[in-house]
Length: 243
Image (cartoon, rainbow, N blue to C red):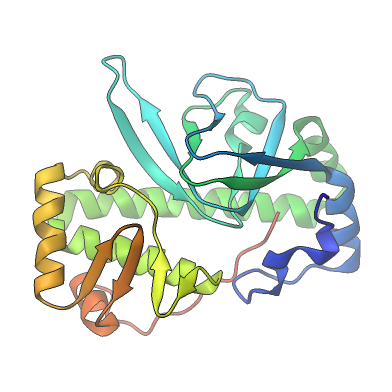
């Protein structure tokens, strides 16, 4: 059975902004169904013109680009609540691919109805613009991190971001958060070699700051992890729209 938008389990999290009854009603009409996929499924392919857009309801994935020699560059990670496919909706084709890392359940939207949203529901359209702006912000931050932070700092920053998002969407058990990616995925995303990534993870374990093992991240000292990530200010949750 497809999840009704008014019963969406993500709406209960403080991470996501509240929606009006009218917005919930519109989203229910915008949604055309749900898609359940296995780990490893390609959700969108670079260069494709997908007729569908998605929101990750459950499960995790990643965005990546593929080069002519077959190498893959991970761009970012897809977590519950993330909107997928806006690029295809606006630019006609995807500039990167999206793959499911775990089994995923996705809310499915008809791309053709995107224009109806901009025409008749400007508040929801602004939410999409906000999400695009935040994605651009994090891309810029990622470039700055790769250019100016050590490997230790890069991994610490990634762990803080992923840890905070996982906690905010209840992806934790006994103090550990689900982080089902490969070391190679993390290395690609941060511009590090696999060897350097492995050595840095070992250093974080030895210093009793964080342990990432078998798909689970356990932060042993959150203040020290934030300090290594050059995030010394008090964390402020960024409330984001849910599409």
